[in-house]
Amino acid sequence: GLQRVGIKCAKRFADEPLDAVNTGLVARLCVLDEFCLEVMKVEGIVDRILAAIDNRALIDDMSKRGLWLDIITIASCMSTCSPEAMKSFQAVSLHVKLISLLKTFRSSGKMPSMREEVARCKTMAALFVLIGNLMKGDDATLK
Image (tube, rainbow, N blue to C red; front, side):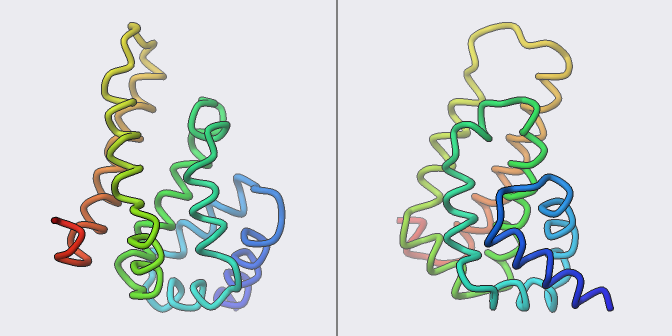
């Protein structure tokens, strides 16, 4: 039932253009460790996540910020349930990239609208969670 649908969504996430509804569903289901472990079996999923995290068009476009935050949520879940994902994230020094992004969001310079400020706060919170997960995952990351 739900697991089959979720895996189908995860395969779609890995293979097709990013879709907010599909990505959101995968993000919500990934909080369940057993589903997260199944998602990790989808070929190319970690590479897709890493590419999406680096996608400046997703990061900078406020209308796509929710989609990007769902990708961050998937990465956070994977970093806690999958040693393979953690190794992949550490291999590309994802924590360093995220800290750099966090600095960018923290020092935006202009006076944001309330909507932008809320999005900025949600973004920073999601980045803190993922960075924390990555830092807990391996003592070598802390060095």
